[in-house]
Image (cartoon, rainbow, N blue to C red; front, side, top):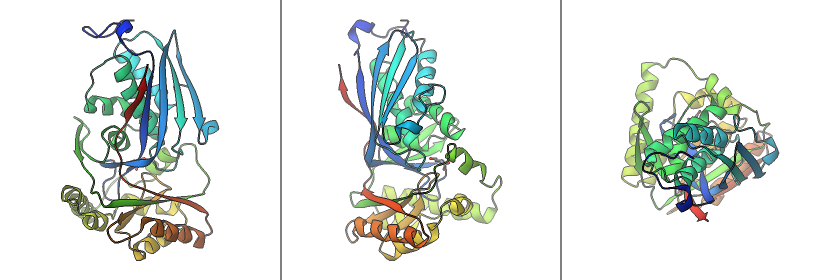
Amino acid sequence: MDLRAGRMSRASLPNKVIVKAPATTANLGPGFDVFGMSLEHPSDKVTITPISKDIKIEVSGLAADSIPTDPEKNTAGVVAKHILHEFKIRTGLMIKLEKGIPHSLGLGSSAASAAAVAFGLNRLFELKLDPKELIQLAAKGEIASAGFEHADNVSAAICGDFVIIKSYKPLEVVHLKSPQNLDISIAIPSIPNKPKKTEEARSILPKTVSMEKLVYNIGHAATMATGFALSDVNLIGKSMSDAVVEPARAFMIPGYQEVRKRALEAGACGVCISGAGPAILAVVNSNNTDASEVARVMERGFESAGVNADTYCTRPGKGVFLLQEE
Ligand code: HSE
């Protein structure tokens, strides 16, 4: 094994790492590919062990049968392969993904696997990578699921809380804490899962944007960032509106407008499509509104459109972390 010059020898490194990576939401309305937020629940557990050769992936947990185990097609495998190549680490890896995050729903399932592997290999091989480098490596995995290295979900999965991708080239990420009284209600409609859902949801986006819509989105995105900086949940929620991406995608989620309307009537501060959907996310001020009541009306909103939905409540959470090493 040819670790980078100056790195520790294999004998002093762990033989196995187990990490936990959170679900994330992206866009939050006006911040397409720019805003991300980690969620306290659910999360994935990922175990990485060096083996003699090849990258082997085992998947268990939610919808495990529909997640590819071919390292070329799995975000975890893509990231692992890239890191081994980049750092000239000559070993194989066994990666066990225990999926708690359902995939293809807009909750950053692929980003969690990617972030977990970047973080885990950094630990396993003492690569001394900083969060920005981890984000860059983890974003490579998004090509496997979205066809593009969008870094919003992986940044949130690595940093935790709220992130802003200020620039992609060069990558610059701003990280802000979330308000204590920010609760989140999520509704996940039971609609058929498409294999390349995010790629498709990106392919239908407009290629050009009018000046009017640009001004609208800049105003809302700037105000949302200010809401996080001021810990003002109402300001965050009021800014949760998008003139560009959501109008193009809403048709993919039957009942979206009704769910949004009912959640706002029940006291949610703002509602958006979570990432590329179809999960819908509502921001709730826990000082005056019960997130579980908002979740209930969101479920009924979907029912009114003839769609069953699962709902749950959570909060912004921390980034990927080490559970155990041996
Ligand atoms: N920003 C990405 C998109 C997030 O909306 O396509 C995908 O989870």
